[in-house]
Length: 190
Length: 172
Image 1 (cartoon, chains in turn blue, orange):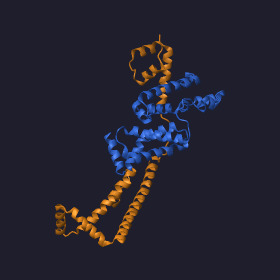
Image 2: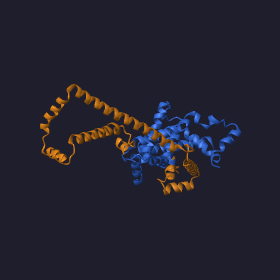
Image 3: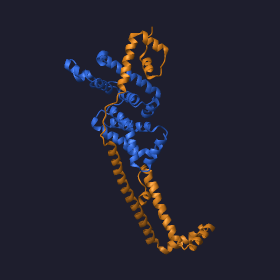
Image 4: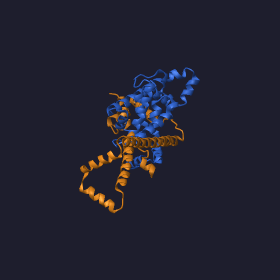
C-alpha cells in the first residue's frame, strides 16, 4: 500500500517511468476485463490504451478510498460498458446468444469435426464462457483469474456483494450444465 | 438421503464450507454427488487458466508516448493561453490609460491611498527605501507573478491534467 502511494505520488509529479510501471502492474487485470467483455478483438488494444489514459488523467482524483486495482478495474469496466453501448451490443441479457454454442459453430455430426473440437478443452470452455451473459463472464473472470473478493468485484461492477456471489454461483452452474449437456465427462476430462 | 446442492458443492470448493463434515461424508457415500463435485472441481481448475490475451510487447511504451504527446500539446496550449491572457490584460490596461489618462488614474490611486494608510505599510515603504529598492517596481513584479500563478492554478489545474507541468515547472 505504501509502495502504491509512493508510485502514485511519483506519477502525479510527472514521472512517466513510474506510470509505465503502473501499466505493467495492472495490464493483466485491464486485459482480462476488456478481453472478456468486448467481443471485437480488433478493438481490444485500443480500449486497454483508453483505460490507462483515463487512469493517468484521473489519478489526482483517486482518493485512496479503495484499492488501486479496484479503481482501475472500475475504469476498465465502465470504459467497456460505454464502448458496448456505443456499438449497441445488448447488455445484461440473461439469454445466451445462439452463435456461442458449439453445436451451431462446428457441425459436430462429422466425426472429424468432433475430434477437432475434442482437441482443445480450454478453447471449448472459453467459447462456453463467451456465450454466458456479460455480467456472468465478467464476474467469473474477476473471481477466478484475478482472484478478487466479492466486495472488490462489487465495487468494480457497482453491485452488492450478495448479487456478485449469486451471479458467480449461477454462472458456474450454468456453465457446468451446458458442458454436461454437450459433452460426456470422459470426453471433456478423459 | 438429501443430495448436495450445486451451491453447497461450490461453497465447499470455494473454501467457505471447508471441513464441513456433512458435505465430506456425503461425498464419500454418494457417487452422483461425487461426480458433480469432480465436474465442478475440474471446471474451477479450468476457469483459473489464464485467458489467452495478447497486448503488444510495446503496449506500455505506446501508452506512455501517447501521454507524453498529449502533455506536449497541453504545454503548448497552456503557454498560448497564458500569453493571450497577458496580452489581453495589457490591452485592457492600455485602453483604460488611453481613455482615462495617466493623470486621472494616478490621482484616483492617490485618493485611494487614504484607505490604505496603515502604519505597517509606512514602515514597509521606509524599509524598502532604506534598502534602496524601488517599491512600486517590486510590487508590480510580485503582482505579475501572482497573476501568472493564479492563471496557472485556476485555469489549468482545474482541468484535471494532474501530471502536466505548471508554468513554474517550465520556468525551472
